[in-house]
Length: 312
Image 1 (tube, rainbow, N blue to C red):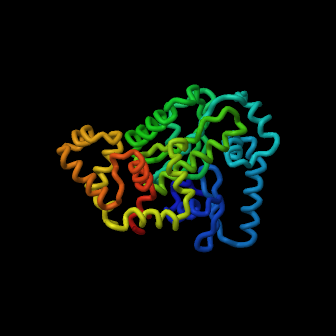
Image 2 (cartoon, helix red, strand yellow):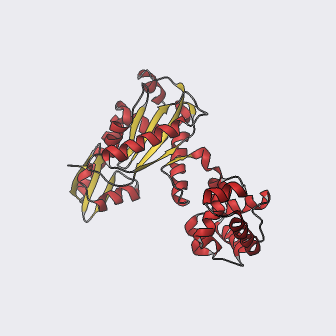
Image 3 (tube, one colour):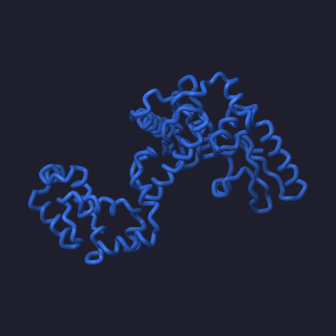
């Protein structure tokens, strides 16, 4: 038995890829148990012993709070889960978010232990290890409509970076008002991270609610997205590869289609900006000074960057 932190990167990647607590590698069995890994030769009798060990862990898991809430978030709890939660004197009806933290690297300590040192917790908050590189933070939220959860996540990630030299990202699920709906918030946090990765979004904190456009675009079949891009960029497919033009377009959108403000903040002459926008109009037929055309172009820019650049 060795600490998870002592495992090779190849073994950790295998656990992550299979999303399992038991894997086979080079004729050895590796079984995760708490913060440790049990290693034994891959033989039938050892597999049976590992299966028995895992069954015992599962059968006793509801006696341990972290496993209780892990199983709750993964929708694996039985009918007695609510009673066990009530026994812990944790309010059933209360506004909470699930913040999903995922490590972007490997450390000697379990990721959850690092988070505990970086994340201030209030009464009723819970930090649950999900996988060796992922943890779910169930956190009370007294202002569901505010950005408080995002500000908190940024502060935690900054502390991790500054004090531990460790990078991570956070996906924030929407606020829920009972334990029964917390799995929804957890899944939203995971989806926020998946969407951010797919669309190569900048930053390290991603809120599910704020990614509506990206999620909507993800529902469009890939071949249809490709045909739409080709339709608009057929005259000049290199347009969206030109970093100067991309910077101009993004800045124009960020400044609410205001020519003077955009030119000032980009440190270019207004005529230069007008020339670039006219070049876009001639190439695509879309006048970005018109709201409707700007909306279409904005949506096209929010397609996955790797797909847009490889396929056009």
